[in-house]
Image 1 (cartoon, one colour):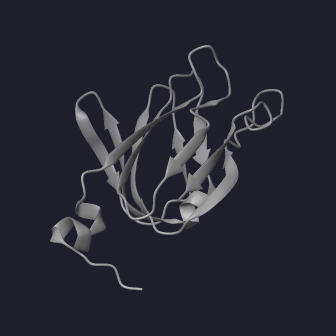
Image 2 (cartoon, helix red, strand yellow; image 1 turned 180 degrees about the vertical axis):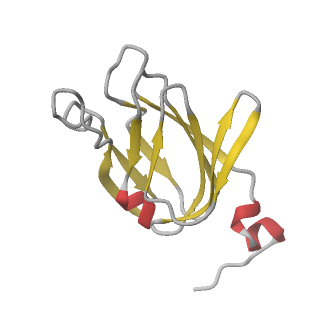
Length: 141
């Protein structure tokens, strides 16, 4: 089946205005959580996934299902003064340090439901942050 394409944004999906989705990795109280823990995206739309870390420890944002199902335009490291680093290419996971912010710009290209969002950093007790509850799900429609 062929779909009509109209306009430059339709021909180049990365030229769309991004839909911003914000996720906090942990919180100031030290809880091992993703907030929100359930994320939903639609194929063919450009997203800017803003990952913030308000906690006192580093965290990973890891979802192999999401990583396999998107075209990554870029990942940016930002601070109060703007973009500091821009990374191109395939992304498998993003590590965000305390107080840090990363932006993952991507277009989902395959639908699916993935219950694999987790942080696999080990705490002082030897357990991973995922074992402490830092898990989530990703749905792409």
